[in-house]
Length: 110
Image (cartoon, rainbow, N blue to C red; front, side, top):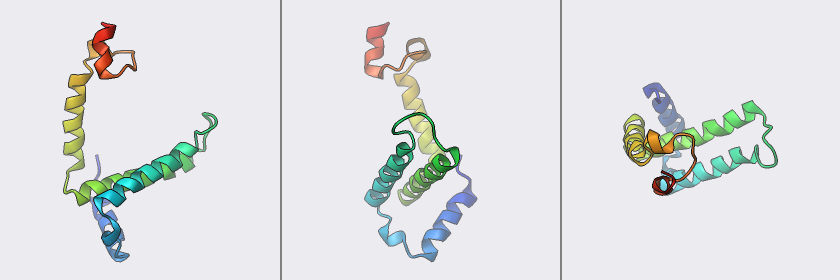
């Protein structure tokens, strides 16, 4: 998923600017939300959007997410796969296919 050289480049970028002092888990989590909101602005009034601008905002979201995982000493691939396993249990294909219902309502739909 995230290449080791990408993580290392992010670490180097932060270190060169002495920004790690500001990268508490709380600050990084806030930054993810802020950047996500900036990405969402591109879709505020309709579904037309500038792909390059959206990708720039997505890169900001992903950057902060990777930095947060790094700060928490978490392996991105591992945490994604662990969460995917949990989500597979909540949303079995036979109940979830073709519906956007939340997992706790899937049984009601069966």
